[in-house]
Amino acid sequence: MESDDHTSEHQVTTNPALTGFLGRCPRCQRGHLFSGYLKLAHGCEVCGLDYAFADPADGPAFFGMSIVAVPALAFALWFQFTFEPPLWMHLFVSLPVTVIACVLILRPLKGWLVCSQFFHKAEEGSIDTAWHASEKERKARL
Image 1: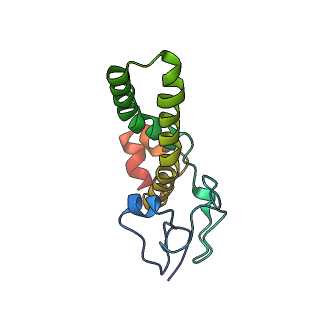
Image 2: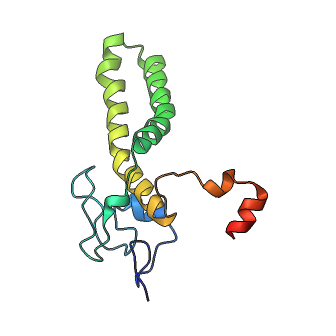
């Protein structure tokens, strides 16, 4: 059996979200995905998968802010209408709650995006030259 970074004798997960949330290797589900809180490891210590393919970019931050925004706003409004605190109190209560919530979900979201990239074999985008070819040229290439 020929092997590359995306195929091997390991059972590939059918649930990249769960594997990513647990911070496990997307190929073997046993190795660690992270070497620090948000720093990706260079590769899996169990199956040897190189994590160089992984580039979640700003995705975790975007999803984190999007997920936290509504509950954070609801908390801030509840806090305001229940206790009617001065504005500076929101800086000491609502702002830290929002920041902590965003930071707590960054790691699971980053793991999910990296595992999804592996699962879906995502790679750098390129333009398919056959797409721009005429119908006659496309048939000739096949």
